[in-house]
Amino acid sequence: MKKLTLIVLSIVALFSSCKKEQHFEIVIKGGLVNTGEGAPSVNTDIGINADTISYIGDINVKNADKVIEANGLVVAPGFIDMHTHLDPIFKYPDAKSHVTQGVTLALGGPDGGDFWPFGTYLDSLSKQPLGMNVAFLVGHNEIRNQVMKMDNREPTAEELDKMKSMVEQAMKEGAFGISTGLKYLPGAFSKVDEVIELSKSASKYGGIYTSHLREEGLGLIEGVAEAIKIGEDAKIPIILTHHKVVGQPMWGSSVKTLAMVDSARAKGIDVMIDQYPYTASYTGISVLIPSWSRAGGQNKFIERTNDKKLKDSILKGIEFNLLNDRGGGDLERVQLASTPWDKTLTGKTLKYWAESEGMEPTIKNGAILVLKAQINGGGSAIYHIIDENDLQRILKYPFTMIGSDGRLSAPGSSWPHPRAYGSFPRVLGHYVRELKVIDLPTAIKKMTSMSADRLHLPKRGRLKVGNYADITIFNPKTIIDKATFLEPHQYSEGIEYVLVNGVITIDKGLFTENRGGKVLYGSAKK
Image 1 (cartoon, rainbow, N blue to C red):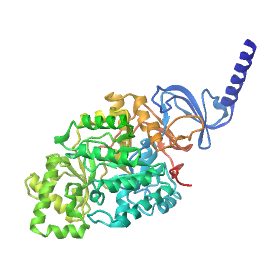
Image 2: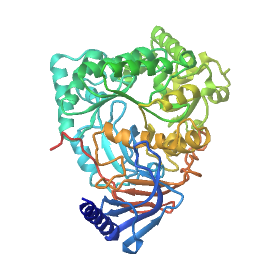
Image 3: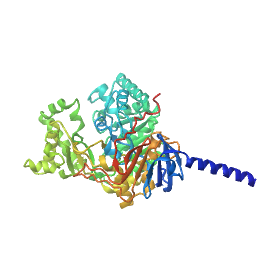
Image 4: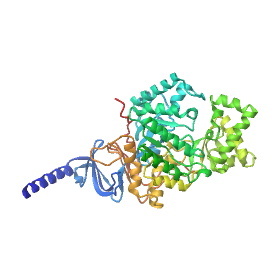
């Protein structure tokens, strides 16, 4: 028996020796390897061939074409962004604003989506030199707009069947699920039964459902309940996307929303969350305007503003939202981000705009200016209306993943929210190292394996032999976001290396011209 044991141990030793002595195209040497599953990091090496992790363990670097010295650095799976606005990707295929955060995979098409036909878009994108991997959801708002335009009504049976067919088509063409933006148009005009039926079409093909809730302010609790109902009735996994509590009247309500998620999970309903680490949101200025007033599109909206009674009603609705919702009760909390009709206002607050017009910065005058902005074609704004306590509570929640809600950006492109450049380093630098809200292994798990599991991508999100070599290497002592609300176009620091499918895209902190990104397709695509 003893002799047999020695023989087995000899065979194991020989196999291990062969592995570490084999040839590798890339070896990551001496790093603090974190597999992405929530356990502490281990000091070891990783060997890579082509796009795959070939070996994890002690490696003789003499057998490597390229050696990355990772002493003192954390070697983690590439970060996965669960909520990304990828619409500028044909303009910025290198995705530098994301890759420099350590992101190797981004999920696009959130908040109801913004393109159709689905498969044609993905086919065109697959021909681009992508800096990171991308995956997409099909958007409810886009599908509804294709079939019903901006009509404020329920679909006919024929229209509903058409929309269900479109969801199924997108799933077969590679969608990972369906997204809704029930706060936005035309999604705001839909009833819950419509969304359930369309979600069933995604569920049938193994998809997920991500929900920009119908309300995140005064109607937050009802919005969470609606999303849970959709998931339960459609039998589809749910993500409460960019989960937050908007407006001072509701601050603290994350206690209740997280309890609702716990209760749903206890009943067997598969609910998770994603979150960005900032106390401000970013969206169109139209979010302050009553949805009913914009039914039928911009021309119809302008017609209504020419009717005194309707205009007064619209202004009252805007005043209500400025007081109780994204306005935060203070015009200084609304920071204009995209003002194509007057670029001198970009980056300035609604209070500044009022005072520059010789107006008192009152809520009533703020409503007049918001209406003026929309009549001029609209724009976007940053809304400083989230409480830090809610943010930290949601971040600590065990089923919260990280999603930037950022749009691909480059210096000179409008005035983005700093999350576009800094979300992932901010979690690691500010909330892990500085504030110690969560520990490092937990943070990495929220950025990697949890997200990969939600997307049913078993070969990504973990450092494991046989998995794709999507790897982010960072300095835990220096990683931090640099982008701010006043100077948003600043790349993060502390990301030393990024490999995308085995291609070194960031090398010694420098963004290279190497491109390894791919379009990823959901499992229903044959």
